[in-house]
Image 1 (cartoon, protein in one colour):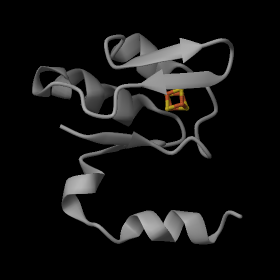
Image 2 (cartoon, helix red, strand yellow):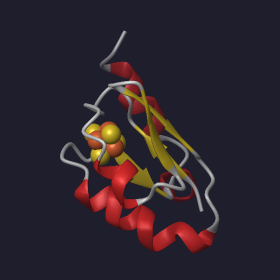
Image 3 (cartoon, protein in one colour):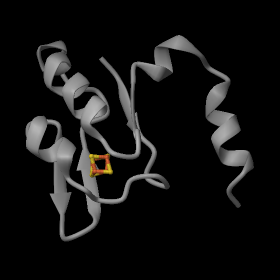
Image 4 (cartoon, protein in one colour):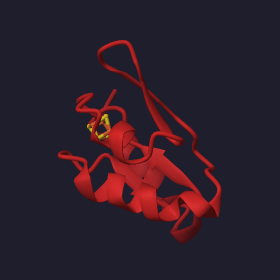
Length: 78
Ligand code: SF4
């Protein structure tokens, strides 16, 4: 599976690191490290993490669904 974290949105709440510790980890107070291609066995945990993220920064399988939307996010941010 694939996932992307919108680090412009991520506020470092660390919910994801609690719910899917094999995929997400906090580095210091605010920097989030994550595995963008976790094993499918992690899907349940990743889904929970994505649901729990207060700012919906975790996008699951978005790379498979569409190739265009990635451009949208960039246009508003210089
Ligand atoms: S739960 Fe969301 S805001 Fe919090 S660290 Fe994870 S991705 Fe960032």
